[in-house]
Length: 400
Image (cartoon, rainbow, N blue to C red; front, side, top):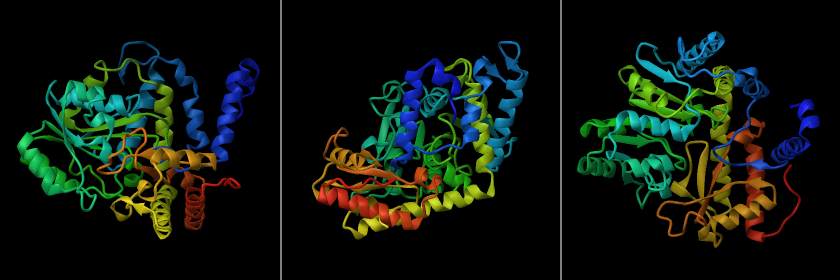
């Protein structure tokens, strides 16, 4: 983008923006939770809506001058429901959460009594901090009932999850993860939740774009409430959405505002609306298909070089690589690859005996590079480069 005013008024910030733009263009981004938005999304994010304080909800604002904000928020809500084929008579959508973490917090505050039980996946097996981990406020205000994956298969063990749920009787069960590469059986989770009279919450932050693109099963038939960030596979700005069944909508809305937040960032809401419209186009389905195909190809090619992929492969946009089995920690792997122009993140693998600060593996994702037009042939080349850098431990011409 052009920053003609910023270039003159604040050269230090301008230089940092240009430097970051150069870094993004000259590296291979394999961070599973990042993407490249369109210029239209960026333009909406930088619009004059950033000047307006619109505390409250449409037609119920606490300040005057919100006519356009009301229209904008309603339009964003309409686009969100339409994208995921939801009836406005059955589902409510809140587009105001600033990001995923406060959105999850808002859901728990609305549905789980303080000190109650949240059943979520262990952080070291692919769960998120806000699924009840002790380091998060969600683990301080509520008790986490952790579950993980099978030691043998590294897949979700639904019978074991049912056993834990019946024993602990959680108030709410969370499924949807940051580092699990397989399809989740939402029907089985619904059965588990019903067996213990718990709410079923789906955090689809990572695979929302895949659901929109029809390459991942929709959780809406089974869940009571669904949260997603908008900046991963959905390819929007950094924000979040909360979908809830109508009977829960008043509790959810009050929990977001005034429970946790003040006025929404309407420039971000505008940007979300643009991204939702883009995701509704036919070409987005092709994009989602390519994201998954690229992920599967890259995982398969790395396997050919002898790298162990957790659970044996992937059904989604991401996968975990066990690097410690080849004598390299996740932290060292991340550093080696970054020096050679490939960006990944260190990540724990199931039953990891190493600390999260220097775990046994890395997480790889393909949403960002797919947005740049990468195809299967490029995945083979990237796998070849990754293997070279990690086995030869040498630096040679960066991938551009």
